[in-house]
Length: 98
Image (cartoon, rainbow, N blue to C red; front, side, top):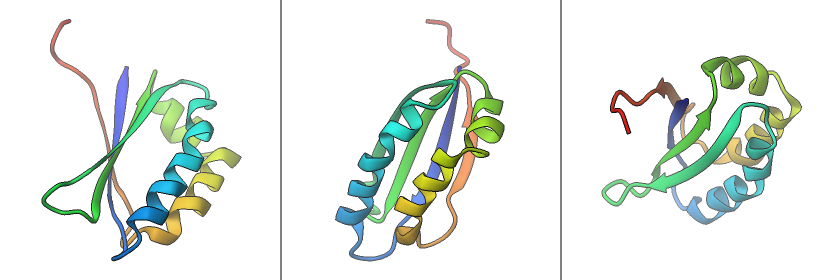
């Protein structure tokens, strides 16, 4: 299991619209092949900074399958207008045994 972490800076005064856009896009992620869940967090110290965390079975389900889909285009059409800059994306995996 891998987690995509997208660091997203949004435009000033667009938090409410951005959060609504992400909520509307959640079904696109959950229906995507290989997606195992999604979460959005907001920074306390930097309120225009969010982290979108999506769990994927493999990195390729995100980088190839999802990014090449119509669902990805819809996600970006909904949330993209609120981005202050392109999201910074990385993939991580747990190194602790449960």
